[in-house]
Image 1: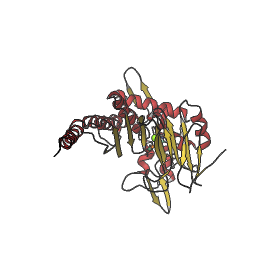
Image 2: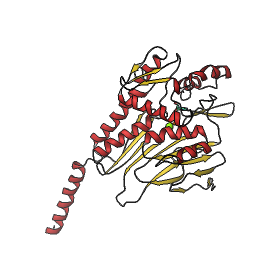
Image 3: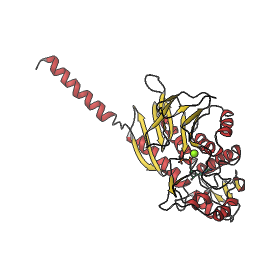
Image 4: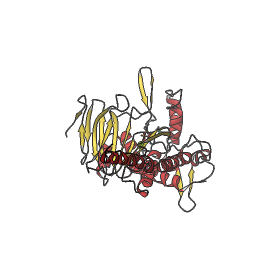
Amino acid sequence: MSRNLFFSVFLFFVLLCVTTSCSQAIASQSEFALATVCTITLYDKGKPQVYRDIFNRIREIENRMSVHIQGSDADRINKSAGIEAVKVHDDVFEVIERALYYAEMSGGAFDPTVGPLVSLWDIGSEQPRVPSQTEIDQVLPLIDWQQVELNQESKTVFLKKPGMALDLGAIAKGYAADEAAAIIRQERIPRAIIDLGGNIVAVGEKPDKTLWRIGIQNPLDIRGAHIGIVQVREKTVVTSGVYERFFEADGKQYHHIFSPFDGYPAANGLLSATIIADASMDADALSTAAFVMGYEKARLLIESLEGAAGIFVFEDLSICITRDVDFILSDDDFWVAVD
Ligand code: ADP
Ligand code: MG
């Protein structure tokens, strides 16, 4: 073996050892949490400890905010409805405060007190069902965000009417995604993609400085089939749609986003509403709000908010886009309407 060749082989093994042992980089990690598949992709510095920290934080948030976990703050608030105020963790207080802000801003289309409706339809369980009109009429008076009392000093939450119940399913994933992004920035990881069941945050920028390309789910196709992509930098992209959770009865599809006004799955010609914004908690609340409000009202709301934009997909396969969105259509069954 020539000296040069020997040196090259030696160098190759040294480099191999350095890249495998020093970085121990993990390209991406998926876990089931917040009732969905959560995938974190840390570029360049994907150390196992950082993945662990992120998933621990996501689970901590779930354990505080899920109404399905006995003893969680949300569960305790619901069990004390009409009885007493409940002291909660700062995380929970912050999310409920923000939820009430969006409830007001959306004229009640977004309402974190939809709990009784969600239970009545039982969507997401083994046996969802279409309730009777009498049952719906019975729970509708309990859906009222104005009956939630917050106390800033004591950090307590009180649902004033017995039978009321919070459901933070439309906002908690956004909060968790923001918290994951905070850890990534704290760890100085230059770029990452957070995907909590379609709640996406793009952190940092790609090495070649090009924009992140985030796929927009085709609401009528299998998961991962996209109608197009949005190009973003340091933004969150969140979609609420008919496809996320639904069931069929008598040849009709019923999805999981309810109109607090009539108690039925929101029906206003939309298949999905996507919000692009700076904070994922805001985008999460807004995408649900937009889906319930419908295009005309949602558009006015979104355009009044700094840094926010929307993509609306309709049942006739048309797409309406608010200003400032870099959207590239890739499925020619759909078409972008110009108004
Ligand atoms: P997903 O969780 O599927 O990504 P959303 O963020 O739109 O979609 O949240 C939908 C969930 O929010 C429902 O499963 C339910 O728990 C709750 N929810 C349903 N309707 C409303 C509403 N009008 N306002 C607030 N939360 C709602
Ligand atoms: Mg939402």
